[in-house]
Each structure stands twice: as C-alpha cells, then as structure tokens.
Image (cartoon, rainbow, N blue to C red):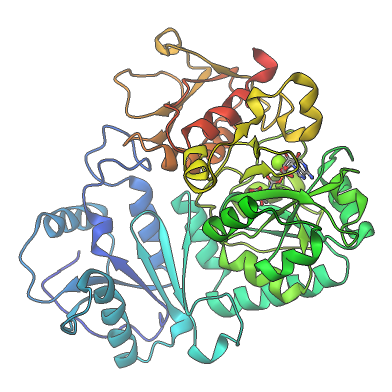
Length: 492
Ligand code: TXA
Ligand code: MG
C-alpha cells in the first residue's frame, strides 16, 4: 500500500534508474484515446505499465510543494491503492525561480534537484508525461557540436506497450540513441540501408547519390522502379546542389515549413541518379523535423533517399515495430525513436509547372500553403493521364490486408463481431466488434497521428472487414481521408 503523505527523498540503491511521473498522468483523461470511451479513469494499461516498470526502476511522482489536495491527487491515491502499485518515492520540493514559466520549468527543475541529491546521472533519468511522451536527458558532455540532438529529448509513443519495450531496450537512452545514430550514419555512408523515424512515418534510407544503395531500397520494399523516392536533407544548403532551379515560391515554402512535413519537387541536378527519380527530370526533396532523422542524415554526410518503410502498397509504419513486422531483415540497422507524431506522410508539391501542384496531400494543409504562396492546384483536379506525375497518386495504396470500407453510417455494422471500426470522435453506438478510437476529442491531427497504428491493429485481428466514416476535411483531415480512400480503393 502506498502512503502518499510520506515524502521520501531517496531511492533504493538497487533501482538507481528513475522514472519520474507527471502528476497529470493520474488525472481523469477524458478526451484521450488510450482508454475505452466510457472508462472513468486512465486505462488499465497505465497501471500495468507502472507495475512492469517498478520491477526495474524507481518511480517518482513529480509533485509541487505545498499543494492542496486536488482532484488529481485524490484520483491518484485511488488508482494507486486499488492497483497495488508501489510508488516507492514521492517528491515535494523546489520553488520555481521568479520570472520563469512555472509550468514548463517546474517538473524539470524538480527532476534535476532530486536527481542531483540522489546522484542519479542524466542517463538514468526518464520523465514520463501526458500524451505518452517520454523525456530523456543527456549527460551535457555527450552532445557534440553541430548535433541536431537537443540536450533534453522527448519521444512520443502510441501505446504503453511500445513505451515500456523502448525503455527496457534503452537502458541509457541518450547514449544508446547516439551510438545507434553514429552506426546508422556509417552504414548509410557505406552504401547500406537504415530504417529511421521521421515526424511523418518511418523511412527506409540509403545514400541518394549511390545508385547501388538506392536499388536495395526497391528490392527491400518490393517497390516498382517507376515509383520515385523522396530525398531527405538535414539543411537547406544540402539541397541546393541537388536541384538546377529554386523558384521563388518553392523557396518561400521551404523557409516557412522546413524542417517539417513538406516535400518539394524541383528540376534535378546530375548529382541525383535516375533510379531515385524513376527517370523523371525532377527530384522530390524534404528536410524532416525529427531530430533523430536530422542527426542521422548529418552523420552520414549524404542526402538520403527514403520512402516509407513498408512493403509497396501497404500501410505506412509509425513505429519501429511496424517496420520490423514488414521489412525485418531487409535493412542493416533501424533507429527506434518511438512513435511518429504527425503520423501520415508529407505533403508533396511540385514546381515543375507554372502553377504549383499538390501531388499528395499530407502533413501541411493546402490552406497553409496558399496563405504562403497564393493559389496552387491539387492532384485530385488533374486529368487521369497526370497520374504519371506521381505514382503516389495511384488509386490503391496504404492498404490493410483486411478489406477496408468507407461508409456513411456505421449503424449497420454495430452488431458484427467480425467487423472492426475506426472511430473518429466518441460515437453514441456500442459496437460488438473491436473499435479503434482515432480521436475521442475529434481532433484531426490526433487522428492522423493514430491512423496507421489503428489500421494495423485492426488488421491484426483476423476480421472480415474494417469500416470507417470519412473525417471532416479541415486541416490534416483531407489528407487522412485521402489515405482512407486509397486504402479502401480495392473495395470501392
Ligand atoms: O513523409 C514522407 O514523405 C515519408 C517520409 C519517410 O519522409 N516518405 C514517403 O515516401 O512517404 P514514399 O516513397 O512512400 O512517397 C513518396 C511520394 C510518392 O507518391 C512518389 O510518387 C512521390 O512522392 N514522388 C517522389 N519523387 C517524385 C518526383 N520526382 N516527382 C513526382 N512525385 C514524386
Ligand atoms: Mg509510401
């Protein structure tokens, strides 16, 4: 049993790695999708996770000193005593400095102070906070000059299971990641394949200037050679020699949206081999914002060609496990950076015609693009022969093995045990089959982040059908619907 009035400030010597827990984790989490819609409190997965983690780590709740007995605390007490989780240490201390943003500074200051007084080195500290986010800390000397890795690195996860297995396989998270990136960079520089996380989806990378290396990507993915690859760079300067022209509008967009989920198609220079662009005279280029991706590219010293790391035509991966399931053994290394936060691919926009054309809707929506550079056209408006411009516009793509159907009304499927539902919002129905909540709070960005994970989970359940209603087309909703329509194309 836990006595939260006790305020121990040391950790047991046998568990000298600490997982700090944000008190917000214990709050009633209405509006998140990691629990059943009607559950009163945070999911049983959370409790299971705590039980699992307490075997190996000290769990320390980050609390504010002099705090009132809030609803959060009551709920936390109830959860802990019901579940038998033994939080070995609680913590109350430190006043934030005047003039600082208390909400931001507070937990990190507390963690730092507690860790110092308990001699917990940065490498042995983890901070688990809401939204399944995990912050890791570097030993200050470990971040080299020019590195894209921030001293405090926050990763996101889709499930507690993913989070736990990541923690267990990264006993010194920062050091482990740095070593993996160093090795990955070397492999890429020597013509090998490395799977890595970006903010959109995981990519399968190779040196874009080495045709033999790029060829391996196509065989690993069973991708036809007519489908060109996106080249990833770690800064704008690395892009310039790869293109022969940079129209002003492209330059404006890059300035505004890089690093981030935006890919620009521009006339290619001779440095880009034909295999990368499938013979097209233009090359697609993007600078991702995920610091692990940027650091990997930087360490390789090469522009990196990388399609999504899935078998051709199948659902894209948003965790390292997804990559392993489909492509395990087909690459030389994988960087596990947790779950992707945007969750669907970048927007691809071409500058080869007079008016810029969106070839694939994605992480940056059309309204944001038009606010920056004025009118653009989109692939959907193109005539059928224009499909040759971007094979990503092929009607069937991103597909699950289980047939997926877009419906206007889910009611007819409510009693079908063999039908899985991808649900946006809470819905008022009860379903007999499994339900994946894309976003209980009807947030299209959250739905995008969870889409592929949810599709894959339902796909693993041997169902006869997956049904889904299209999302409202605001923001990233249009891009989510585009993926759903392509995943459903075989059934329409
Ligand atoms: O978010 C993303 O863009 C992810 C991550 C890994 O960066 N990558 C990705 O790559 O989605 P991939 O290969 O799965 O999709 C690339 C899309 C395809 O639709 C392809 O046809 C189009 O970009 N594309 C690539 N090069 C092109 C070119 N030269 N002209 C027109 N379209 C091109
Ligand atoms: Mg793809």
